[in-house]
Image (cartoon, rainbow, N blue to C red; front, side):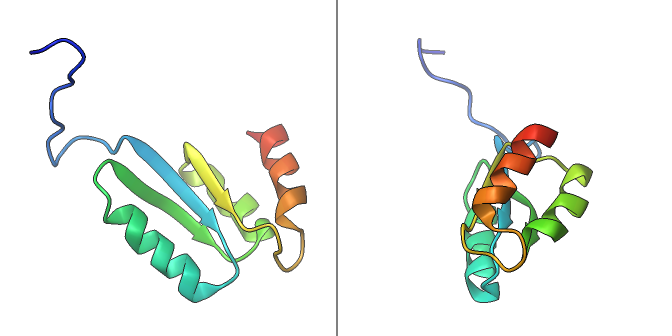
Length: 88
């Protein structure tokens, strides 16, 4: 193997990056999920429409990255980031 190159990953290996989404716009949320899952090395491990739902469901499969809308119903995404940082 050449220096600096990594072996190609096979289809059965774990995704490189687990991503979760918190977005209240259903069409946007579904579209982002399709893009993430359709990108090699990425897996969408959860989607929610608000921070409260995400706080209840995220511990089942913790993501490496959490994409969160700022203007959400209920708790704002900017406030939710603080809660997620403290909890996880």
